Image (cartoon, rainbow, N blue to C red; front, side, top):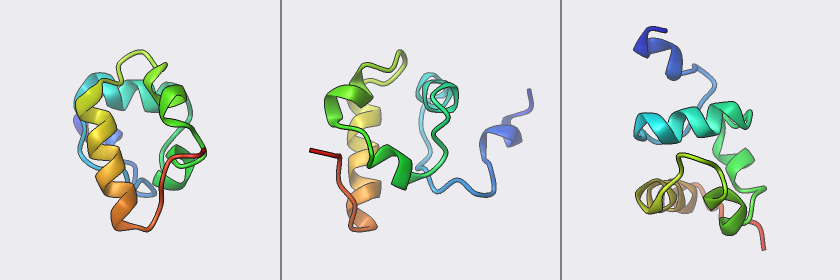
Length: 70
């Protein structure tokens, strides 16, 4: 699959490492609002999501006034 396919036009996710991109895609997540529906532990359960991806997503959500679900 070409790299351009990962950058869905509807996606507002930050640039992440490929394992994190695959993990989110496999979970059907393409938008920060969808990430915000998860708790941080739920996000960390996705195979391919590591501490760096969690921090990148946290910063991107904070920029939009979003946070992980409680």
